[in-house]
Length: 150
Image (cartoon, rainbow, N blue to C red; front, side):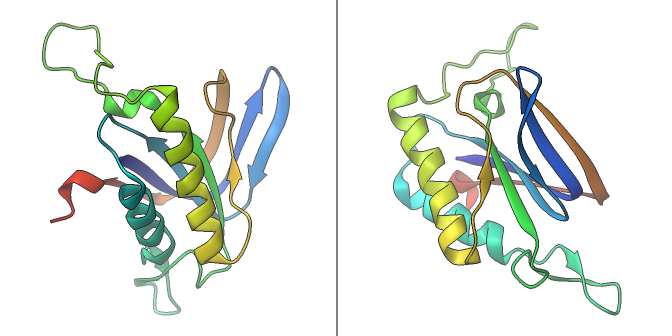
């Protein structure tokens, strides 16, 4: 699984012109599930997301987590994170997981983040055409791949 985590002052998801989810300060997380990903990947990434110290402390040092700051999380599924761009100019999504694997692992990631954080994680709608808006704070953007954890 691959995540793009952005520290935000606010973020939202709109679907068909209707606001679906909105958060204030916290994390906007794009979640990509690849073939071969497992529930262990989802759990590991959820723990990393909630514990990652990318919020400033009183001294201005990035030393606080989203849990420490009472921040929110908005997680959106995004199969394009697994695009292969090695050949040609048209990305290939052959390594992106199909719905049968991707939906349960995306949902598990969100549930685990909620459990660890102690509050609800807001989401997009899997497979929907979504408009995602955000104000990246910093900017701070982190990419994590569960296959690169060793």
